[in-house]
Image (cartoon, rainbow, N blue to C red; front, side, top):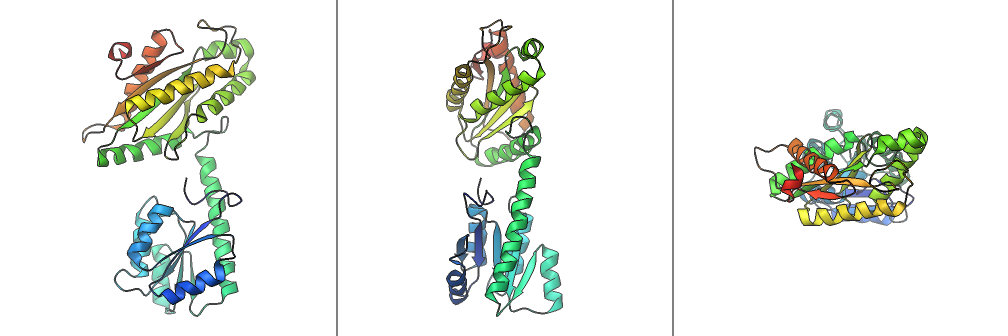
Length: 314
């Protein structure tokens, strides 16, 4: 996850966009000792490219630039759902009320007028970075399952819609792994719901160790079900990850006295992989994985069934 991580481990990224190299040199000179990662761009076009690649925590943006001016850069940033939350602080010699009003209307959070005071600039930067950090923390909480600490269903649904569109745009495979804890109702009945919660936390932790790429999403799908969304992943690779998940849960050796399969907690897994077509829907991927999960349960549980195993999915 780019940009807005815990500043203790990853300093916030600040992107400065200005067509005058001397202005950027001043910023680099005075900000290089700050606890930030400063990146510069010499045009609006370059700034937008860097913003998309780096997902900075704050953008310092000049207004008067040839070609694409700062107002247009701000407009495009705010029109992109993946960049819209990045605060934009204008650094400008423009001091006319109508222009300032226009900047705020486009979504800027602040103006610092040239020639600016470095201490004031630093203070305003720090204020906006602190607000961004709190906003990101709240956003993470809203996307996190309170019990297990992995992503929640809301975050998964948003990620599925986004990745489905991306996979369709680039004609790339998108895989989905659906996981169910075997005989979990029996587990709760035998050990109690408090132990059931502990079990789910441990299972989620084991599954999470198998998800390594930043773009992959592991979420609690509901109850004792989990789901992993794997962009740009063919079925063979998804099966390998799923088998790793199954083994990781087995290695926990969580006692399950009332399991018909064995004496410890296991999981069943269904996998679906699509290269989305124009008339296909994201929900079809979930339905296909659910069919394979049903096949895994019917086949005896503690196993992986993929879309290629057509007989087992029926």
